[in-house]
Length: 189
Image (cartoon, rainbow, N blue to C red):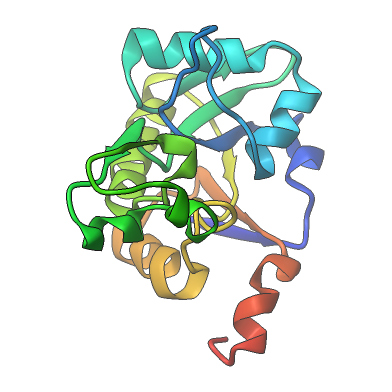
């Protein structure tokens, strides 16, 4: 896997596919929820892409797949589940801190309010490797999967996974130094 620093991922749309972190929740109107980060940017750039995501999830499940092929190649990369049912107090840790107080034991939380799941990200990256081969893609640019609104730490969670996986150079991680700033301030980097 290659790393590209301080580049706007959207400036790369002509050079390869863009991987968008997604959750598996589909609203009643058939739209996938793309409410934050790169997914939100994609929603603004590509009208109707929320329905492409919803259709993809309903047909294929919460898996890696095409959202758009034209005018640019956009790929869904699941980082969050469809939903999470809270069965005990400890499971509230799987919900984003900003909404934990809104949900109690026995309630079901939509995927967009869940923390990113590192095991799901690993599964998605394995699917992405197969997807790249199946579709003869040269390059897929990905952000720090699960680290923005997903609540994961790049250095504690994502980077160790990426190192362990030894991904091919067709996958390019696009990192903004500003995305690492909180960890620099905490002395992690």
